[in-house]
Amino acid sequence: DDGHVLAGLAFQKDMERKASIMGGGNLTVPVQRVTDFVNGVASTTAPSSSYRLGIKPSACHEIYPKPLVNALRDAIVNHFEVQMPGFLCEDALLHAVE
Image (cartoon, rainbow, N blue to C red; front, side):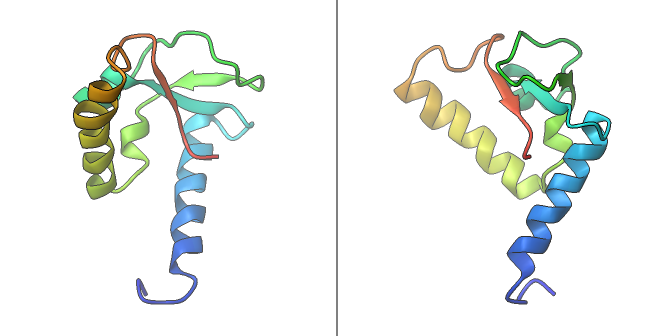
C-alpha cells in the first residue's frame, strides 16, 4: 500500500535489494557512467572509483522506477550540467543505492 506509513522504507528496501542483486550480492556496488545513465544504456566499463569493496558496471537506471529515472536525467542534463559544466562526461560515475 503506497499510503502506508512505512511505504518509504519498503521502497528503500526494494531499491537496495535490486542493487545488491545487480552488484552480485557481495557488497560490490553497481555503477553506471553518467552518460550511459542519461542515454538509458548499460555501462560495460567504468572509470576507477573510491568505493573500496568493488564496483560492477551496470544498468543502474533499471533499479529505479521510471519517474525517478526521468527526474534524475532531467536534473543531470538541465541543472547539474548547467551549473557545473563538464559534469555530464564519460568519467562521471553514478553509484547505486546502498
